[in-house]
Length: 167
Image (tube, rainbow, N blue to C red; front, side, top):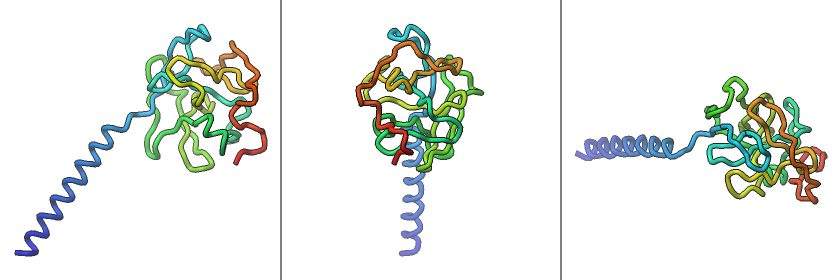
């Protein structure tokens, strides 16, 4: 009798575990990159699934990561969970969307080979407060080119980029 009850409990626990996993997976929002018209820059730029502007750090090329440590706190990399891929939303060329493994093991989204970041100074969709900071952070157009319309000196809040390899 005890063995029979134990089997039922184990089966019930497994069913509950599978059900919970499916529910968690359904809640997780896919990392989507899409194009949106930006009023400030007067052009279309890349944004994430919530409409937040995406930027690229010019000194980053290939597998050379410059924005690490405190920089990656101010400029969070757009990442996807291991084993998943970013989704090409409206206005995006799917073949230009890719990923690269960061030094910390996270998988960062790229577009036209450029690493993508959000800016912590953008608090809502449509803002481009990171545009032109230190003349090295720029929004990206759906064609895969940097958008260099608005430039600012950054006033030292450029995101911890000091060129010293991060940390």
